[in-house]
Amino acid sequence: MKEPLISTHQLSCRYGSLEILKDLHLEIPQGSIYGFLGPNGAGKTTTIRLLLGLIKPTAGSIRLFGQELERHRVQVLQRVGALIETPSLYKHLSGRDNLEVMRRMVGLKKSRVDEVLEIVRLRQDAHRPVKQYSLGMCQRLGIALALLSDPELLILDEPTNGLDPSGIREMRELLKELNQEHGKTIFLSSHLLSEIEKTVTHVGILHQGQLRFQGWVQELQKATQRASTVEVEVGNVLLANEILLGIGHAVETLDAQRLRVAVQEKEEAAALNHFLVEGGVAVYNLAFTAQSLEEVFLSMTEAPVLESSAKTQLQPVLQT
Ligand code: ATP
Image 1 (cartoon, rainbow, N blue to C red):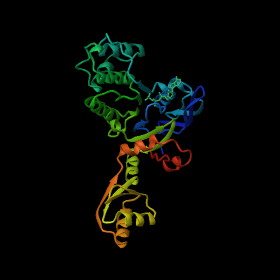
Image 2 (cartoon, rainbow, N blue to C red; image 1 turned 30 degrees about the vertical axis):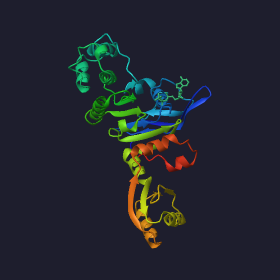
Image 3 (cartoon, protein in one colour; image 1 turned 90 degrees about the vertical axis):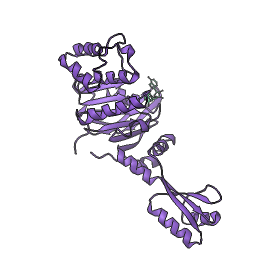
Image 4 (cartoon, rainbow, N blue to C red; image 1 turned 135 degrees about the horizontal axis):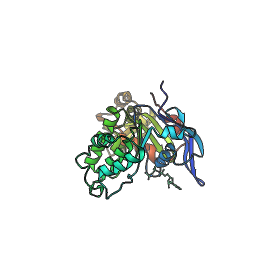
């Protein structure tokens, strides 16, 4: 198995007495688009600052490209491009000149500016002053700056934050293209699953500084099928309730004819129907309702962190 491009081991960080991150084990596979999700204040930006060597962890270690960040900081960070929140741009200069300033500082060939303008689709607007750019254009220019040195890894903090739906779509397409056509591994943070679920291959869910889930996005989708309910319309709610409680289901009475029952597997819906009919209850309707991806995400980030049960239930499932 290939070593992940980014891995952290028991990474912890405190600001004074405040514990912000606790024992983070991140694994970002090479070639992935990894969505680092969590509500505001979960610790995403702090993690990104640590990954970029901008602050030091209180405990634990970080490896980038298989090397300890602490010992090989300069070599390792040369291979990383980053955008933290809104990019720092010279607003009175054109998009091209912003890139040109950075190109000269880094000492890259002149043609690289046109190459990155082309990638982020800003060539047409390259001559305009940045103060006339939309937020989406500023974000794309920020990504162009991060791309100048042709890094293998891009770390982007909330790149879709504040964008309108078309800006989000453009960003989504750009990130996919950078990943699929230019071979970049991308680590991006977001507090909204809906903005990134169509883009990412892997997800890490952070809640109160702890990782609640890490794995392929399909694994998260599987969790939606596991966390399901069945709504049952019956002739006798009281009797149905009694039967279902008797066979160990959690039941909620919705109205005079309907019950909601928690199930773990699809097959349980058939068994439940069987027990009701056997028990003399007429079943008029039975509808399976899976939790949406958003509901699963919210259930992971709204409940307080439970030390042991959360870890066993949501253990890392990353495969590379
Ligand atoms: P957001 O999306 O709102 O930026 P986040 O997940 O990126 O949230 P962080 O910015 O990492 O979260 O902040 C995590 C916690 O650390 C918050 O409670 C924040 O108040 C606190 N924090 C961040 N920076 C500092 C600092 N320099 N000093 C003290 N506390 C800080």
